[in-house]
Image (cartoon, rainbow, N blue to C red; front, top):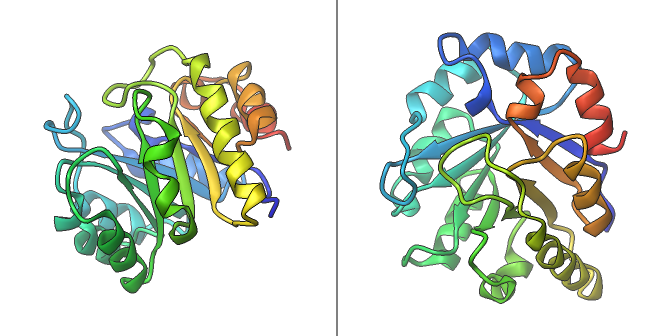
Length: 218
């Protein structure tokens, strides 16, 4: 199944003194998604924000909240982020917890679900779950901090997951996050990506509409 391309600007690269204004910038451009990076300082070496911030953003926004939990124990927090207004909640495969039960619980809470792989994690790690997810996110940098260079060695992983999707007639979205810009976005799209997270390249650009057009291939 082919999805229309989506650009999900990462609010991590927005104005932290006024995240609502960053979200409004996204909405005013006619974009539909925004990416929310939730970091716990354990699974990744950085801290961002929690469900209260998501709930505050939701009050003034109709954007699709693509919430990425970079947490050691994501299963403990999915309910809070669902109640805060997330539309999709993605969890990492790397920590040890019941992945299948957590993915099922996310859907029970009324959200779409996603599964995420770090650069060092092989595609095979998520293969058993492909029939139970709405989105697969391939990290194209090691998560934790914005502004890192794109890892082109992730392109074969993206292509492999896209191949499985086509062979099995599955409908999950295939997302990339990390170093996505005017050059790397089209490379990922050629490998099968349909959903693009752009942080620094989007919020740091004077022509954000051009970033959206080029990265997502509108």
